[in-house]
Amino acid sequence: MPKFARKMTLAVVLMSAGALAACTTTDPYTGMPVRNNTGTGALTGAGVGAVLGYLTNTNKGEQGRKNALIGAGIGALAGGAIGNYMDRQQADFRRSLEGSGVMIRRNGDQIVLVMPSDVTFAVDRSDVQPPFTRVLDDVARTLNAYPQTTIDVVGHADSSGPDDYNQTLSERRASAVAGYLTGPGGVLVDRVFVAGMGERAPIADNATADGRAQNRRVEIILRPLT
Image 1 (cartoon, rainbow, N blue to C red):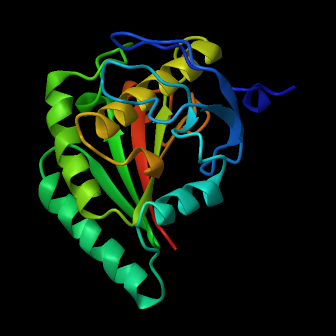
Image 2: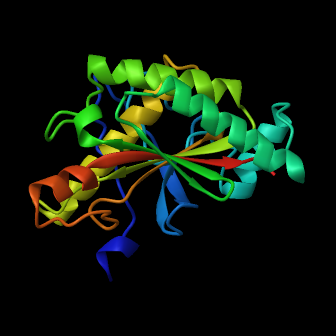
């Protein structure tokens, strides 16, 4: 069986962690099976670990996430309102993240925040560092101002080291970011999906130090709730 088809697991690595039962769900970003927790609010802050997947037990898939948000009173967007909503959100991110090192990419109605290694985590670490919390605080403020978007937090690694280790490290980093956003950042947990891609989706050449640095990243993918 290919490596990417195996069920992903997440080592609980933050300040304290509990063993959480898990089931399988599908990552809307990759289409691959990942683990998903069975308890509501598994991410309650930077000090609590989590499994991958949808962060509440109501969200067994992408439609489940949308249903949960609509049930929470967050209305769906439609028609011309979608593009305008994402345009305003993108502009606010550009203002709040100017000079932070975070790259903002737009693909149709999708916004991607790319957080490279030089503004995220120390080498071989997954704990959220104080300078990075300030960036995440700014991200969370904008996310909270635009609740009609879903949020996928996806970790990536370079090709240095064993494949399995890189996979786990990417998962730990994504979980740490999601934990901060839904904890101190106050982002609604129903909006969030967490996944790790390991070294499978490079954006630069792993043969160079600069390329590896670009590949060590966390991406936050925002899509309108429709």
